[in-house]
Length: 277
Image (tube, rainbow, N blue to C red; front, side, top):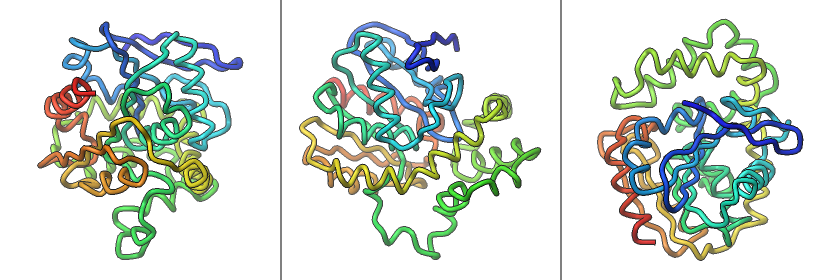
């Protein structure tokens, strides 16, 4: 991908744009970058202008040393303002969905719609999820939040660690190739980037507190997509807390990495939803 850069308070935020028409801003998850959208861009950019942003501290974007979703959503707002985008559809996957939800709660007047993809949103996840019986699904929320230890244990094992995620949280096993994993690993081995990824988890409690203070019913339509073997329909239940206009889709035979595992279906659902907004 060819990136451009925007200066926000002396820091560079990386983005790339494809297509023309109504803007769609897309925010990636962990352990990824805006590269996650590579398979859906050819479908969606035929009808819309797509703006792919590397989250602060990840991909090619520099860190602001603040990782709560309220602070990061403010940075995204500055990016869109700098680009002259007054209104747009917002899409987020994984931690990108964390940021997208907070951004919608803070800057909803600028949004045409909100789409969240396979994520457990801070402050909206049911408390009962965080029980030992669900350890296989949510252990990383604890592990990544611990200071220093993840870095100690993963250093030198970055490829093995990230590969484990892509293999164990996907159903379509060839969706993310060895070269794709190598690309992600190369990005996360850049100085400070792995720690920056963990910092989003370390800020999870603060982000949850921020969302609970901001929580309200959004006026815009919301699309909630979950992989059948990811979070499934639970993401729609979470979105019901902030909207009465939620459309939920469970993508069959799909794991956590929906845009990569089922790009055509993802694109078709998103385009149908946005065209009706």
